[in-house]
Length: 158
Length: 290
Ligand SMILES: Cc1cc2nc3c(=O)[nH]c(=O)nc-3n(C[C@H](O)[C@H](O)[C@H](O)COP(=O)(O)OP(=O)(O)OC[C@H]3O[C@@H](n4cnc5c(N)ncnc54)[C@H](O)[C@@H]3O)c2cc1C
Ligand code: FES
Ligand code: FES
Image (tube, rainbow over the protein chains, first blue to last red):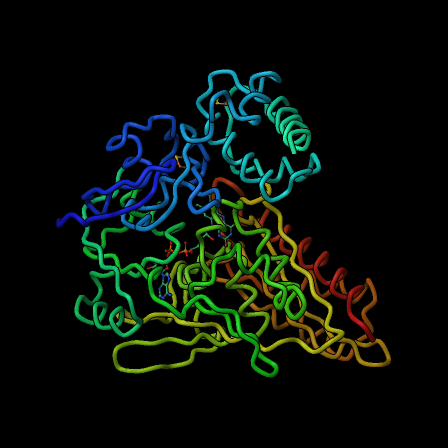
C-alpha cells in the first residue's frame, strides 16, 4: 500500500513523514517519533490511555490515523511540562492520583483539556469528564481529588 | 490489534469524493470521524481496500436554519452540535442527546453523519432522527435523493445507503414552540452505549389532551423503533400518569424481538424499555406547554 506524506506539529515541533495509511496517530507518535508517553491499552477507543490533544481538543490517538492528522497541532504528555512539571502533573503527584501510572498520561491530558474549558469544574463534572478513562489501580478517588487541586493551582497562578 | 492495510484518499471536494467512491464501489468506505470505523478496522471486522476521508471537504460541517427546518451537514462534529446556540434553542432534545454520546474525546471527532450512517441500534441520533421525522440527504455520482428517517434504518448497522452514496446532510423539521421533549437511557456508565433508551416529543392541545406524540426506542432492537401503538393510544387523551403508564407498557410490548447480549437479556431490555419510555413521557409532558 502506498505511503502518504504528512506534515504536522507535535509538541511545538514541525514533523514531516511518510506513513502507511493504516498507522494510527498513537503508533506514529510511539514508534516513529519515540514519544512513548502516550500509552495503548485497548486500541479501540474504550480505555482513554492514548488520549492526546489535537488542535486543542482531547481525542483518542488510537482512533485517528496519522494521515488524518495532516496539518494538525498535536500535544502529548511529553509536551505538557515546561521547566518543571505542569500544575496538573504536580497535583497528580501530590495527591496520589496514580499508582502504576499507565492510565496517567491519558488522565492528565483529559483533565488538562477539561480545565482549559472549565477552569472550576464541580466534582460531578470532573467525574463525567474522566468517565471515558479507565484506571485499574487507584479507584479514581484520588484522581478526582488531584483534578480539583489542579484547578485551584491553575486559578492561583492566574 | 492493528488495522489491515488499505489505501487512503483525501478528496478536497464533494464531487471528487463521489467520483472516487463510484470508481471503487463496495471496496471503498467513507471515513468521517473514525470513532466507529477505526475500531472496526482494528478489530478486523471491516476490511475496505480504500478509505475516503471526508474531513478535508469544505461545506459539509455547517448548521443552517431554513424556515422551519434545521439542516445539519454530515460532517458536523458531535461536540460542535453540543455547543451550537441554534441547536440549543430550536432542538434542545438534540443538544441533550449529544451529551449522552460517548465521552468528550469521542465527540470531538465523531460526526452526525457518521453516527447515522453507522446505524448502531444503541445510538442516540438514529432514534432522534426517527422521532423528529428527519430527512436524510444522500448524494452519489449520479445525483441526489432524500430518504425519510423511517426508511433509512434497515437493520443492525444497515441503512438504505448504497455503495457509492454519501450522506451529506440531515434536514430536521423544528418542533413548534411548546413541544415537550425528553431523552432517557439506561447505560452502565455515563457515555456508554444505552442498554435501553427512549426519546419523546409531545404536544398538548389547549385542553391539556395529547395532540401529538412521537416515541422512539433505541438499544432494544436491531434498529431504532417508533412505538406507533403507544403514540396512537395517547392521541386525544389527557396525559394522566395512568395514560403514560399504559403507553409505556404498549411501547415495550411493541418490540418484536428485543436484543439480548452479555449486558442485558431480552427480558431485561423489554422491562427497561418500559421504564425509559415512562420517564421520557413524564418529562416531555411536564415540559409541554398547553
Ligand atoms: C468508546 C466509544 C463510545 C461511544 N459511545 C457512543 C454512544 O454512547 N452513543 C453513540 O451514538 N455513539 C457512540 N459511539 C460512536 C460514536 O458516536 C461515533 O462517532 C459514531 O458512531 C460514528 O461517527 P464517525 O463520524 O466517527 O464515523 P466513522 O467511524 O468515520 O464512520 C462510521 C460508518 O459510517 C460511514 N460513514 C461515515 N460518514 C458517512 C457519510 N457522510 N456518508 C456515508 N457513510 C458514512 C463509514 O463508512 C462507516 O461505515 C462511541 C464510540 C466509542 C469509541
Ligand atoms: S488505547 Fe486508545 S482508547 Fe484505549
Ligand atoms: S494508575 Fe494504574 S491504571 Fe491508573
